[in-house]
Image 1 (cartoon, rainbow, N blue to C red):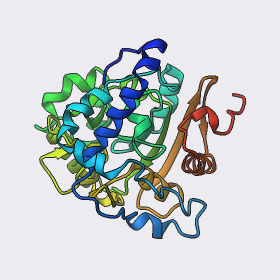
Image 2 (image 1 turned 180 degrees about the vertical axis):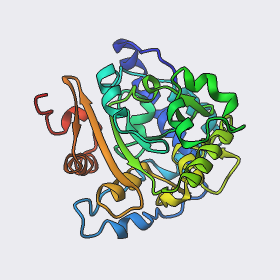
Image 3 (image 1 turned 135 degrees about the vertical axis):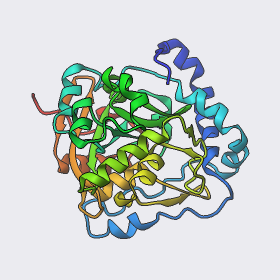
Length: 311
């Protein structure tokens, strides 16, 4: 993703064009105009504070989405590179707070309203990143000298302790890149044994260099989108799937909603959110309130959520 900020004037002029491009990139999610299927999350969220959350996720005209399907990789790269402003969590204190207590294989779901891609995908959260671990943590786990990790020693020592799938593919990232965002929900997969943790880290390392899946299609294994990378490497997480625009996919909000309500396999670890005035660590109840508010409003502006309490 590009780091350049576009000016206020160019945003005004380019707004309609970028909006249309974002509509087109959603063509990656369509094979046929079949009815949407909310999957297991709708049933599992019944009688919880998030009942009814994550409904009506198909907000783009299916015919337009269908026409855009062949252009998805090209348009996806364009849309993914548009940055309107700096993320509200992009500051050292927020990085330290987010990483406090992180364990290898924790999954970070981020909300990036300062990026065009983050505002156009369905849900409060639009991307997933996995914490692979520092050199010390990987040594303690007994996986540091594994042949799958050795080619990446220099990158990990340089601070690239996260793994994600974004255009053009699966790669390592540092915390400054990962948390150039507005909010993050941290979840922990149910992987308890050291042997299985080592296996998962090894599998993640082996996937570095895989192509990004611009079609967000769980049926293909040669290319991976962000949540698919986590789900296929850690099946114990049992991330819920749904049918969107004709394809089985994973919507990050479904995963977070099940975890924060205790209905999923992943455990809720923490939630940080920032606004123009600052950032704060929040509890489970605030995350639930923010998700409910997001799905009740058509605009995606974190400053419309409840005000930050004083630090």
